[in-house]
Amino acid sequence: MLIFFLISILILAVYFIVKKVFYLAKRNLFKDQSAWSGKDIKIKYTKTKEISESTSPDNFLEIIAKESKVYLDDQSKKEAE
Image 1 (cartoon, rainbow, N blue to C red):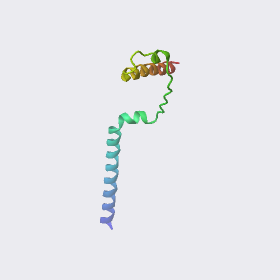
Image 2 (tube, rainbow, N blue to C red):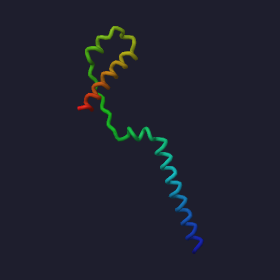
Image 3 (tube, rainbow, N blue to C red):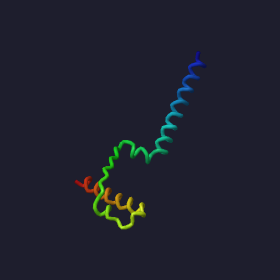
Image 4 (cartoon, rainbow, N blue to C red):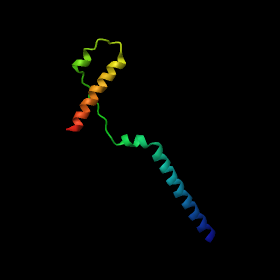
């Protein structure tokens, strides 16, 4: 009976130690993702006049960069309020 008791305590101790190690490893590996996990990201797309009058329609990266800048500027203004 004493052997069974010691083995069960040893198994429980190993289980909790391994569980804690996996939890810490998971938390460190996904640290950047956990910062975003609780946030709702809502993107409202509105085509502004300055973007729609672009002279080079073939340069999609430039259009995306301009739209992103306008969106981020709007979001920073909303957060400042």
